[in-house]
Image: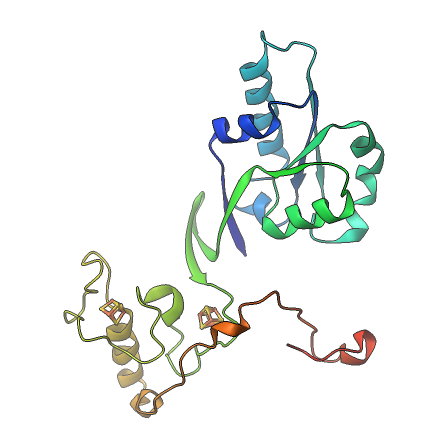
Length: 226
Ligand code: SF4
Ligand code: SF4
């Protein structure tokens, strides 16, 4: 799932400083699971902003509301009336949700209240680890299920680099070399031939805005999967 972190309160405060009626919109999806932008975090942010603004601009008002998911149009209708009277919107969703709100309500300033950080897994409550950067060219089949884009400091598709120090990464000796781990796991599976073949480098031109059409839905949307 997508992992996000709250922005510093002062940064958020600066965004909304010129506005009087601020609508804080949470999301019940990924950001809720990673404790960054669900209903509880909306309530906390609302209280923090009220305290910060308190004495200086007592007429200002903050309202909070959490939709099921901000990245899906069918959940946004509930916001229409609230948005109409708001001066600006603070979105606590990931970057996709923020952009979706900004597009739906183009006459309202929409500000992000969280930083979208990664696609990751839960290690513990409040502890997450990045696993994927959605590169669009997944090579996990050849790399024993270890992502070279996120795990290797240089994002190498063919490794290790010349600086590898055995098990450790030359960029950060506290981290294991991703390619050492890839080699070790493939060797244990008797699959080292997977990395004998040189893979083409990442096609970074793919890193434009991508549209994803699931298999079986191509006809419905009349466009090819990109
Ligand atoms: S190679 Fe890594 S970044 Fe790319 S899709 Fe696979 S897991 Fe994600
Ligand atoms: S030492 Fe290993 S993980 Fe670090 S940059 Fe080189 S190949 Fe990547």
